[in-house]
Length: 284
Image 1 (cartoon, rainbow, N blue to C red):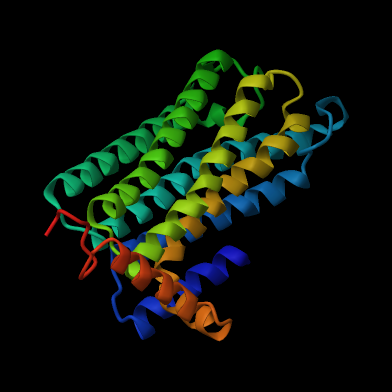
Image 2: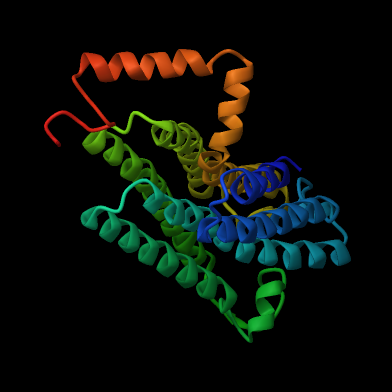
């Protein structure tokens, strides 16, 4: 519900207040659809054994659990991938510098390659493909080993943490090189502050991936890692939306009496540093 509210507020702000819709808005809507479906599958799993010991779960529920688990894993790759692409599509609004744009496009390429690679690795984990939706060792299908799947998920988690760090680093670089003492500066701060939590949730999820033995009692262990999987996707979506909510944040800040304080601080800092027109000293 909260993610839907954030995205709908973003769309209202972009289309009716700022009147500057873009590709990042479309990507945010797609990400919302995926993360909501992901949450729905997590809820579905809770009705079919998630959190319970596997030996206590009836076979029909166990079959439903592994069907939902595979769907959840496939959706997860696109959920976090679209979150990151939505942020990357927003970043050119801050600056059009050539090197900056090259870094953005390079990161987009790496995010897409990682998302597609891991998605298809998981999709075609078994031959025949349909066996990927069955409980492990329940058929004669040829599948990747649990170790290979664990290595893939670990690689995806590590790369995800690196990508999230890059998504924080790029806007910080814009601030450092341009000193944008304007509303755009506060947009970047919003991305940066929420991005910290994305990195933290990614690290916690990686910890559970490496310390939990998924070959043993998968249903019981799902109750722990499922929460962090959902959080990573939803917080990433909020991070992608907060910069677009700047007009709303500005109105709320004004109502709370914070707007004048921020403006005063920006003017004071710019004056103390001898900065004019939002430029960094030595750049003009």
